[in-house]
Length: 299
Image (cartoon, rainbow, N blue to C red; front, side):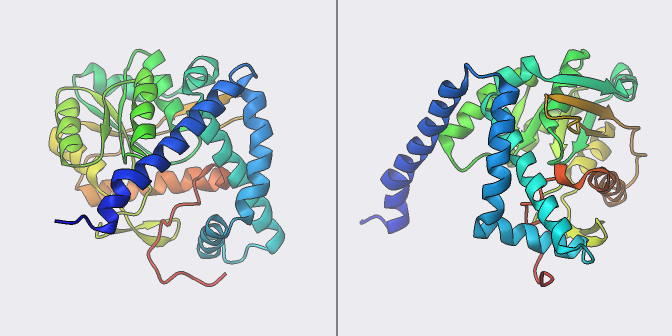
């Protein structure tokens, strides 16, 4: 039987493209390794802040999201927020590319570790609920250095080579590192149910998930983090690591536990905490997500 075009593409064209991207990124990492990390991030952040808003796809998503959440925002203010958001995204990308150096060089100030220590010391698991804000890996690094290794579950990258490399890198900040999906969820449940700690990012749209308010608008919000805490008796703790400056300083905050309740009520509280972080410094959130369903407001 002849293969479809898509199957053929997956066999040779897509794999060739994956290799091209993977080796390009590894070459970038190698060539920039001698340069101090924060010099690399700041130089490229300026380029990213100029380039990304000029690309049609990213620009459209940014404009639509800003129009939804900040309808009264002036054109000048929108331009500044767009630039700063793209600079932050570029910094984050470089920190991932040089994750080993980031792990060693980032200066992370932990706050509220007692909120993590209390349930963990009582033998309960902990689900750290967070978002694509600041650098969420700094949360795991702060927990690890405080004596509380923290796993993570995430959506795998489409590029299989890049994803495998990423798993090896970020495992240094805590294990297990799991992929979203039935197998990953079973492993996550076992890890938390036996007293482990894991970070779950909950600010991406999940089609068919319950509509829960987020930044003033109903948003499809996955309730898996709260459901996991509810089923296992684990503590659901909001955690965030905003960037304090351009020289690799972060503040990793472990906030008080969200009171146990039904999953939707708990996720409503989690969304309120994430919205408060974004309000504090909007440029540190990943506005490039399609967080809300269509129809979208006109810009």
